[in-house]
Length: 615
Image (cartoon, rainbow, N blue to C red):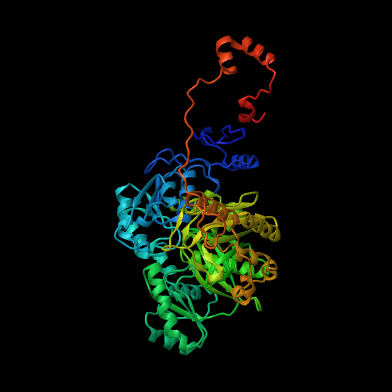
């Protein structure tokens, strides 16, 4: 009673008979509203809120609910969200929350004082003042304390840093703060890669032979490798994103690579434990995007992340090209079975290695968080994954936000490129410095997700080198590749080196265009590093002319007379009155006198509006 559906188009909402004429016939009304393209909320189940009335929200892009559901067990109103992260993903979270009328809170290290993400939030707080640049964002206790002191309802971890840290999730739970992600026990199961493998085996998902528990010493690693043979791959047991990974092809390489991977994992994730598995040569890396509410799970199709270097993804595609339809269905089914069976909650990704020679596939891991490449899934499905995470964390179910499996469809193709400040000509050494020119591309079918890049921004050595993500979409894969190529060619970044020339070579390579690229694609094609550096002629000329004007001729080997150093002559101010002009005529004699003076004038007359208004 009293519920008024919102719609852009008028719809007959006359109460139907039944329940004393007080209710609406929901199914008929939903069909009517869907026919006119409106997103609506079903009627509340009760007018008596058990906890608090739901907040009013603007229209969201993720489905059928204009407001959170009526209060019920497990429903948690969210009015303020903190992003426990930095850069691009923090900005992505703030934008999603702002569209939902949710206040936003940023944290930043002292090195990130001028970071863009700090200014995108409603509030921002310094964290880890006495810690290292990365350690500041790993300060779990301090971050939760800041959230408590500032009435934060929920924390979104983004990716990396604390996103898979069980202790951080437990601190949020103990503080009564909603963690926008899986609960601690699910994070523990999937965050620990060895436990995730055991779970996959339990649900009948094929796995590559590997350790049954995390490995912390070289001796343990050596004993296991001798039992299964080489090559193997050492991976961080409590992390992802390509950090803490090393391929070991012989026993002589084991100790160096194991210790190196463990140190990298400790720096990136705060835990150096490793797990080891047999290395599959030249597979395709295919991952299934999952969204779940703790009871049901829905897949949002697959992404192909095979174009990677040193296990760091560079170009991602959705959907994958050339997979047999039966294989797709098997991957979807296995991903749903393992996540639903584990009671998974929120967004996650189930990753597989696919042998393109036999189409056999193997479970790789579950990433219990949002991924860098989530943009391509959003583009082909129209589903806002970050907003979906927030809604599910607040207690909504998949069917309430329009994400039942039958409601999800995909259209077209999307390709994402990660633009970084890595110099391909110098073995992808990260570059630092000040950005002098920042002119990213635009246009139909192009989505930009930027971080801390703008003219004058300083690129630091402390953090990930990604400047922005460029996502192109079109109805065909080749059209999407053409759009991405055009966008990268238009992009102008000066002051730091970027990997754009390398990505352009990837996009035009026959193996990529045909959809046959595997994880060894970059290593097998050294010609991808053959390109011409941008000459940056305009910026160099401006710098030279500026230096010439200010400092005179200083170039080594310059010939000709030396630029004279003289004191500039400043013209004296005129002492006579300015001649009487038409402005004075207009002021003194009015429009009639002005018109008469114009007609009598024998010269050419120019008005300021000629220049101002471009008439």
